[in-house]
Length: 353
Ligand SMILES: Cc1cc2nc3c(=O)[nH]c(=O)nc-3n(C[C@H](O)[C@H](O)[C@H](O)COP(=O)(O)O)c2cc1C
Image (cartoon, rainbow, N blue to C red):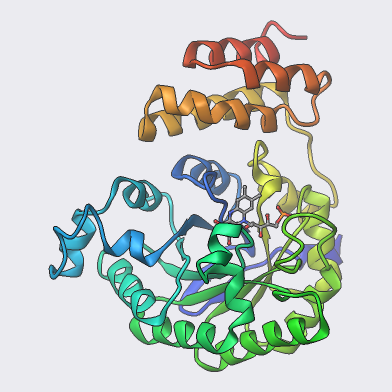
């Protein structure tokens, strides 16, 4: 597969050289350290934290840390911020994603992250479609205010010794003007030193429904070259990852829902690019992976919280299995760590043939 072979390759984001052009996308309440490590072991060359607002980083535990140095502020992080930023030596390079509303706090948050050695790059979320984000003038709302968005990006770039990247969508509105404004913002951002753009190829109004517009990824990649554009949207299988890279010519793939319950999607995409095929996942690996995922969450959040998370995550791990509906129902019903382990043994255990 000589053609496909070149589709997975190293890529540079500013000063950072990624071993390959496959990233784990940021996902709220999902891209904890535990999932990031599982995906990295399977070949994700970059992973992001979920989004966090600059205010959540900068105003920890009331104002006890106000006026202190960036390093002291890092010590005084709120529990939520500390959990989002929790990392380990294996968890590099790490992108921390900010959900900013104004230039001053974005710049302060970037400086704090850099001073604390907390991130290798900082990603600005100009994409989130949630009502809460949009109503507070953040995320996707930024695409409807490209002037303000560019000022935030510029302030972040100025304040940052680290590469600053953007997460964007096709536009706030689906109109030609809405789309042109978003691409114009990306062009402006490239000109002021943003190091890469990840494009989720849906409009803000589309939320997560409908099909991602991969031809638009191709247009952005061409229009913004040599700026690396990572494509996002509908990368639910190794085949989709390789198809998107092939069809769009973009610099890399940012894998989101496709990695939930399937961190091996990275390994399979690499195999597909290199050999034209990939191995299905054995039940034993599913079992080991879901247990490792639980253990990682339990180390950080405790057994009870990990068990709660696995009610949903277990359902993802059951995807594609025979009797998946029954397995999903069992995971959904498992409310304790013991019930979770029993469900794992029932569906993925050695006794199953
Ligand atoms: C549960 C969930 C949470 C997400 N949280 C974030 C987030 O915090 N920041 C962000 O930029 N994108 C977030 N996204 C969007 C993904 O990064 C990605 O762009 C999107 O899911 C499209 O890719 P997919 O269709 O392959 O899932 C989230 C998506 C999902 C499904």
